[in-house]
Image (cartoon, rainbow, N blue to C red; front, side, top):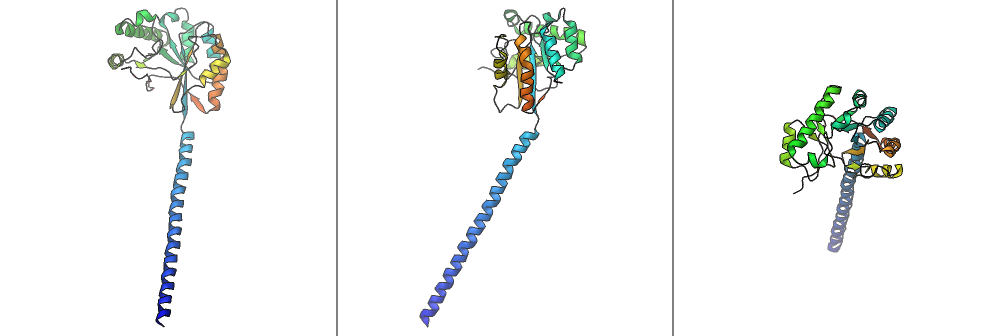
Length: 257
């Protein structure tokens, strides 16, 4: 009799233990399922957020305006209903005032790219550099009525810009814009359209916005040919084309120590 009681107790103990294990497994699975569901939904949401966020690309052209190439670029931009930004050189405006006015009237951004584009002269002192930007700004304003505050360093701001210089620029209401995509058509205007398009695809996926460096010198004929393909490439990726304006957040390279 006593042994039967002990056996029943053991049986009850094992049954209870078994049930505890079963409920523990079920509970753990349920919790993990919830966690998995949350993580899965979170991943999906982040993908949706990325798709919902507008991807912006700024097409920029340096060194103009020039008679043939700049007009050809403007024709293509008009055809695709795309806005770009032209960083103009003050001395190049002489005789091309109509082209500058066309750039403005067609809704493109206008930036300042010094007056002389003479590296030796404009990089001889910060004062000369600023004066050249202000001189070009006045020339642009006289023709278009628009006062541009965005500038680009010939060759880029690296090795030229520091915190003290940037403060001087800001005091003159000037904002710096470098680039993070480079067609390399400035150093080699004879690159094939294939190479130019390939260079347009070279950028870090982490960039929140793309600022593409191109040129509109008289010898940038291949840039004109490549532009439709470049526009189609970015459009297919879902990028929105915008011009740089005085309200845009500036973009410059990290200062060298």
